[in-house]
Amino acid sequence: MKIFLDTANVKEIREAHELGLLDGVTTNPSLVSKEGHDFHEVLRELCSFVNGPVNAEVLSVDGNGMVSEGRTLSKIHKNIVVKIPLIKEGLKAVKILRGEGIRVNVTLCFSPTQALLAAKAGASYISPFIGRLDDVSEVGMDIVRDIKTIYSNYGFKTEILVASIRHPLHVLEAAKIGADIATMPFEVFNKLFNHPLTDIGLARFLSDWEKLKKK
Ligand code: E4P
Image (tube, helix red, strand yellow):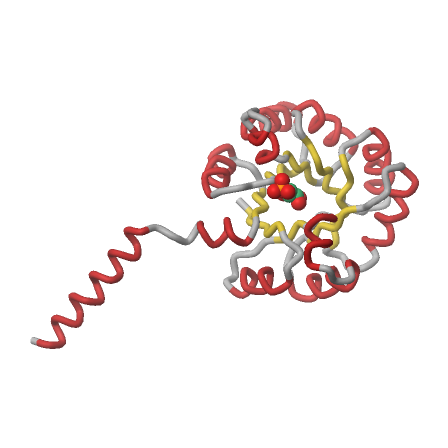
């Protein structure tokens, strides 16, 4: 499973990249706004070192506007993937952009049937938002399972990008289902490294080694 960071914080993205574990990045208008830097400049900087997709979302809500923003974003770098919201106008835009060879990630997906339509429109990626479904007492991961079944039933090539991840258990479930990608905040990524028994085990090895040196 590919690991993406869900942030517009360049420092965090550089750190994950330097570990050699980063496959891509997702941003959204809220994440970009939080960092307070120029959107296109951030995208240019990310594309200069991230070896994989850098997702950038459009702000228009009409088809023509989305297509025009998508074209502009895609010209920044070949690694840019345009994020389009899962609304009717959005899927119209997906079809057009796809026809021009521009990769699209259809975002804000909350149901398997929405995901079916996105794949039919030609999305390269579908982003089910599982944490936000959990927030309203629906089991977010169930839709990932359903999307996986639907896509394999019909041979859709659209990659399942599990989004709105809140904790390591979400990552584990996504991997067990066989999702293509999990995008997560830096904080969740860091948690994946930890296990208390690893720390205890390492401390014990080192202290036993010290004992040998004293003999
Ligand atoms: C994905 O591309 C989105 O940016 C993201 O995963 C949304 O997560 P949130 O629900 O934690 O805001």
